Length: 522
Image 1: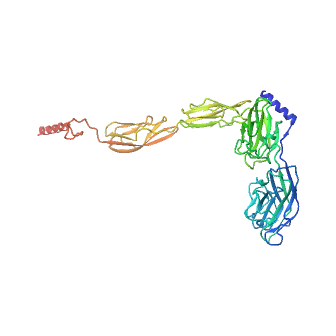
Image 2: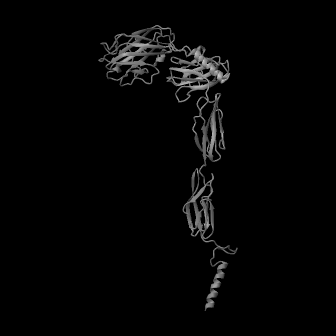
Image 3: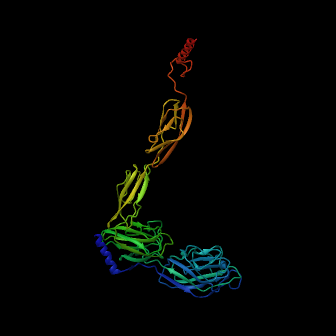
């Protein structure tokens, strides 16, 4: 089927079905309005006036996925004295409040206890809000008939058990002299969504559905694209044609994970598409699926973290032409590996690039342009991102500069007084200019060729900086030039000195000439 036919199919579904509603999690709230007085006269620890205060739960939910408890209108002069235990009909129990909230009056607060809350109650103050179970001292016990020890430390201790029956809340005050009260309490029992498991996946028959993973769980052996499956829900979707389709989550405040699989059971699934974040990290998901007509695909929506539970929209649509979004300029250096990533919106499935600098290639699957440049210059590269809807064109200007030179010539040179001298500064990476510091008198540097030349007029040792530069930078090196005494003529094999002293043949001739001149003048 062509893209236009796939689009028509989706439009028809939206007209006929308008909105598909995903399988929702079941939840029920039960409330006791009984007033409970805290700290009756007697030795500590003191039982509350109703010990326990109870709620009878009767619901179609036969297995709780999560439970939260809310204390309505709680007040106490010293909240830190309070200890509370909740016991379920199945005998599961948790101490959820003990020795927190400080020694000053709480005023009247409403507290909800939920494992997904971001924090516990502070040890020194108590405000209304939603908290994780908050216990500073686990060893304190409550008066009988409260359980001596509890079966768990989180609200999840009630998950997976039948919630129906009598729930008991035990409240005690472990110090005499302060009073308080509770104006009622409530329990919210959540059940897993109907499509919590793969075997009970809902049918995705609309271009837009609203779903939830509140109360969802993960199955043993359930796959997941990132990390550990936490709270996943499933839909089955039958491809109406052989074409590309886009799946996205949206309208949600949770970080979703989206996967699509084929296979017959949860332990024998093959992942065919996956995405965590389609744009900003920690947000909705999106992917493109190359579907085969008549194939049943299993669509999994999960939360990335344990706190990522909530509602979301799941949409299926046909692709649109990608738009290139990557930067239009990039730079590199000859001899240094670099990568430029082509990015684009609208789920491209392939990428292209032409006019690349020498040393570069493009990965047509990932859109990565990479390599080690071998030539300097400015290169205008034509890039593209495509899917079945078309190609989105773009361009990037790659500026490749030279690496700074490295001087390779010797660090020392020698010459003689009055004799011609020559030394060449050599360097890698095509230097365009040279320089030298303080040179022996009579020497100079050719800044174009790097040759130091001339005739030294003074003997001695000079250490000078030499330099080579190009557009990538400047290299430097210390050069030591030693200038010795004046040059001499070659000596005979019988000479014991190469100098022009009296011991040389030239010296003898010169002495004879002078003596003859002196005699003639007499």
